[in-house]
Image 1 (cartoon, helix red, strand yellow):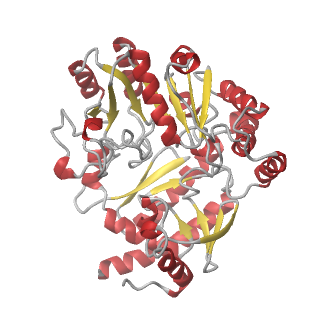
Image 2 (tube, rainbow, N blue to C red):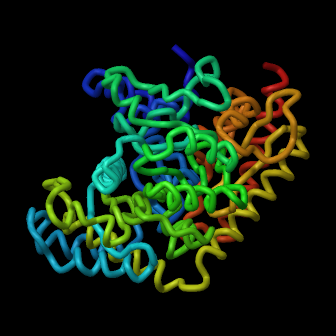
Length: 449
């Protein structure tokens, strides 16, 4: 068994115990990626997180982006506790759901109608079902490297191995999981991100057959790749021309990029929007929002949308508090978080250069990715999934990430960093001080390796 430093001994013991009762020892497969062992935490406060071995971390994983308001914000805890005393579940209506829906309408211009679920994966299924019902077509176009939940449909074409990419003009619609009905794959067309001309050719191949085009407006799940200037407009134009729906998956970007999400930040208007993570501030809560006419199938009952825990009062109470924080910040958001994020990116870049580490931060600041370039890889921004695979040195990043963890800085295993509203300039200074030690450690140990 791999040696685990003494500072993680309690987490290691709990993980060994979990393996005897929990399949794989964790409750989400991605959590097994954490090295040297999946960590166990006791509590968090603001942007600080504490594990069972009494280690403190400045947290940039921040609940995979869900904790945009930091760990355990007092106002949110009070709102949830107050609702818990009134009731935790009705399986019926309460005024809170109207209040949250009205806030979404206020914040997002395209949110003419709203429906709630407990996870963004559920919302993806609802969005695809609505699109097919609205258009009476079955095919949905998605992009390589874009993640739309872990369901059968959401993962088609997500991250195929290089050996199975398929030709540039017709990327594979391979699914990464066993147990998926083969016919599911045939309901999707896959295109490359950030190539508007390629998108137009793919749409032309399937003219009159596409129900929707779905994307992450900023590709946060792969190297934090922003859209080239024409990309989102090309998607909108293609949907309008084809009579297909534009679906924006803003599970990560929603509210992080501003009150109107990435669609407001980049200036595009989708037909349907998937919201998760920050909308609940860590509560299991998600929403589908969009144009009134697109929701007609749900409104008239021809499209089934259900769920025992939909619009759960505890989640609604938490969401109302979260949305109010964004509304209060008005013009200050997302500039404050973006400025701090860019300052951190610049500091990490300087440390990388000082230690001769080929690390390149990329992203808009509120979220960013640290790409570890492979030997001989070209410089410049990464523009799509294939580019990321070809240039990102995942093993070397994993080593640096481990060094950062040992010095109390926690980023996501795949290289993603999330800013929260709880991070302060002092936290950035502290992060860079700790990162300086981690970068020196990595540079020394990696040369030996």
